[in-house]
Amino acid sequence: MSITVHQFPCLSDNYGFLVRDDATGLAACIDTPDAGAILRELDALGWKLALILNTHWHPDHAGGNAQVKAATGAVVVGPKEVERIGQAPDREVSGGDQVTLGQTLLDVIESGGHTLGHIAYFDAADRAAFVGDTLFALGCGRLFEGTPQQMWDSLQRLAALPDETKVYCAHEYTASNARFALSVDDEPALKARAEAIFAARERGEWTVPTTIGLEKATNPFLRAPQLAGRLGLAGAQDYEAFAAVRTAKDNFKG
Image (cartoon, rainbow, N blue to C red; front, side, top):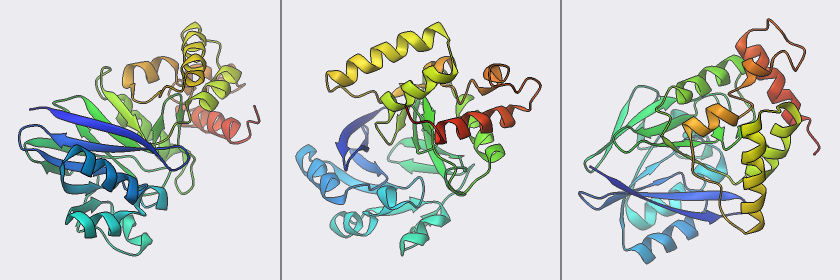
């Protein structure tokens, strides 16, 4: 079993992902940020779209569902909250469910916090996770609907995946995330990574995908418990330290 992931930029800072099951040729798109771009990429690749896999309901993730479905006949799979954009998914899924794309099995991971019903998709065989707006390179999603405890628990589910897992996050936020990370953490590995990120972005290169291992080593949101003392929160619960880092990021002006 193997998959091919085709990544492309769209909108102002989104990434689109098309995933092809190599055994059968069937493809899925992870979210529908830009229907026109998705359909153009499918046409250029010659891929047959079988599934639309939504991570959450936000319009820059599910807003293209109707147009892509109408053009391809793909089945929309996602959390119940996707109905908030006007049309419920054809198949509702939540944490613990599985989705089959040809011969590829995707585990559904509960990852609420950014939105209450947010989910991620994990291909264990190929060590690939499609995480929407839960985990970013050096960042995490804003808590628009969930609580710090919910988001911390979601991040821990993702952190429990194998270190070599490739993490396909939905936005190119990494340079700004790196600037914030440097303001709260002086870990040498972070400094080295930030320098590499700034140089890559200057060259117009992408910083996605990342890996679980790299995020565990350098992402201040996953490292929040280690940063508690620096933040004046010695002895705090892990989710409380996370909440402090998230609040600091929300107020960061750098």
